[in-house]
Length: 196
Image: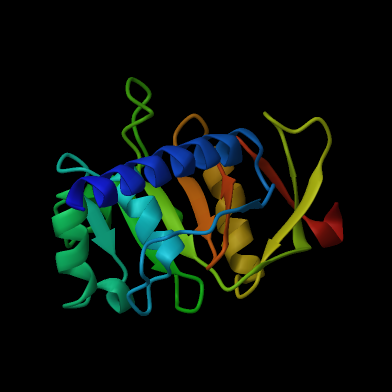
């Protein structure tokens, strides 16, 4: 029975990794994903599935206070081995919520010109997606696409614009709702829709 469960988890991680690759390659496109992992409030099953797919013992993790709980921390430690760090600048990954005050993206690891991949990948848990906030353009997009996330302010998108201007440094962002995933890598150009 344990072997069957392990096999199912491995298949899901493989499927999710493919979805994440596609989402990074097509910024602003929303990909449906139904996770079979049980949610641990306030973390969605999707968020935990991303963690179990991407994290390991060599990827320090920063958790926003709402996820830094006695239920979520042991789960992540058991399933990923990722060490949880106190400082934003020491994290390979971070899990945040759009419902709370977000730290500035430049507070996370930005990578270096020699090793731009040594930056933080920021996972933001969101309620849902819409197309009202910004226009995205750049690599992976034949034409600009409208994109938005419920609960994220204009100030967040201004911060994302600053993040893009640091390219090839800067962070990559994964947005996770309870049923879908979208990405906005640092290479994506962002324009506020009002001025697009």
